[in-house]
Image (cartoon, rainbow, N blue to C red):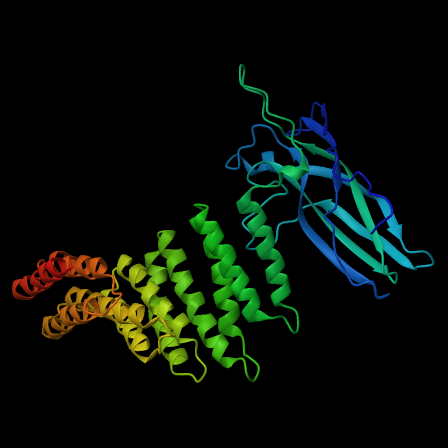
Length: 417
């Protein structure tokens, strides 16, 4: 426990000073920024850390990311200082900040200036530290003078609330900066590529959920490329196969969500091939790959790849048939098999394979009936599925005799219930 809690979280206001030129500059700001906390081993070794895209308290009012790039230029000068340092007695330490300055965008980050999409000024720092004591902590503060252009206020518009660095930067900007860090990490010897790919995929999913589909593509593309180029060590090949297949699966989804169907379509076959390969490996997680196959069907249909969707549904059913249900899970496994066949009928009809769809549909109806006869079965679920099979799948395909059988089976189950 450190002996004293220094008030590092108190907000520091930005001082704005209007100026006249040189064009396009019309404002100077004095900004105080505390570098984010870092955790490093206290083993007496010097470690260098480059921190990129630190959000500051300076946000340009009325910032327009689509304006003339010349209006997004800035000139700045920054000086770091140690704001707080506490350490064990008789310990050696080093705190160095060799360079600080406005953010220099990296290729592929999506940023082109030292401002993010919200007009927040970003800072970079090149630091080093060392300590050999068990207990130590330090905080560095950077004071910056920034000259920039701020659009004239619109008459009658409400004044913006004071800005602090603690508010953070825009989600898209912070994601791009995080991708920069992953890009750097993946170049290092010994990087855990599979874990990094997993985390990049999670980041991509979070961005997609936040309705930022184009921003979601970049981390997923990075994950896919890194995994495709990676040669796994002995013992890691099986996990690598499924990780790469899932990365391609997710990239197809992200590209589709961004309106890039042409780029998405070629990913379908290698992803499906990866799932098939993984499913045959000793020690494969069949629950995982069955779920992956089943979840892949919907995006494949969405981009018009009905044949690939059929392959995915066949894969889901095949793996499900090999799975041994856990004790007490036999009923759920049985209805899941029936539903997988149900979906296979729909996919067969999508590609006009009526000759195969007919016997599969008949087997599906019998499977629902057999399931409903078991003690503890969810009869309402079976009835609902039979009605859907008849009305949504079989009737539109003009398979009226099979649709009638499905409805008769549903009627019989309802009367029995």
